[in-house]
Image 1 (cartoon, chains in turn cyan, red):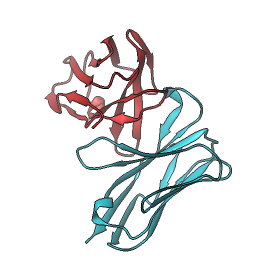
Image 2 (cartoon, rainbow over the protein chains, first blue to last red):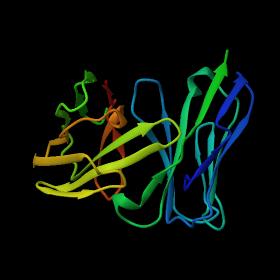
Image 3 (cartoon, one colour):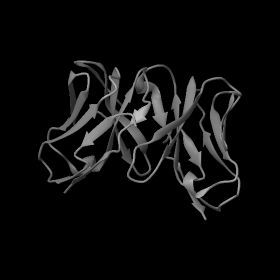
Amino acid sequence: TQLLEQSPQFLSIQEGENLTVYCNSSSVFSSLQWYRQEPGEGPVLLVTVVTGGEVKKLKRLTFQFGDARKDSSLHITAAQPGDTGLYLCAGALGTGANNLFFGTGTRLTVIP
Amino acid sequence: DAGITQSPRHKVTETGTPVTLRCHQTENHRYMYWYRQDPGHGLRLIHYSYGVKDTDKGEVSDGYSVSRSKTEDFLLTLESATSSQTSVYFCATGTGGQPQHFGDGTRLSIL
């Protein structure tokens, strides 16, 4: 059983559309991270959120941490082919490497 | 570019053979990590290091050992490889307790 569930698992959309992907858990996290991973490469850290209700923006990407710190969402506005990749969330139950758990990811394809 | 080099990038070997994967960093980060990535499981921590000769186990450490004799190098060893260890292995580094930068991975196939 995964500690973090990501949905949807797969998403294919047209360029210019908006989308939201979700990261859910029944556990409370001290922080939550989002990564993007492209084929043949390692994950790249996009953002870390630490406060319940926190919203962070990175150009066309908006990240939100749930008020109860159990879930998070990533919204992409006007998706572009360069947004294609595997989006991973990772939640920290506390400090230390042993307390960081990854979801299985959402694989996004943006069609030109 | 976080200055992480993993070697080899691809390896095919047979069950029962020893295998060592190398991670080299140029950023002088204190923490280094080894993860494996498998379909349906996401990234799972194998071992990590918080300094030279200081290492600790992760979630899936059975069958693996690590060594860190220099700040820049972190080795992962499979003493006797099994087919269940077929995976993509990622090294990561960080300045705090969680990974910030990942290498590009080693694809390991054990036949």
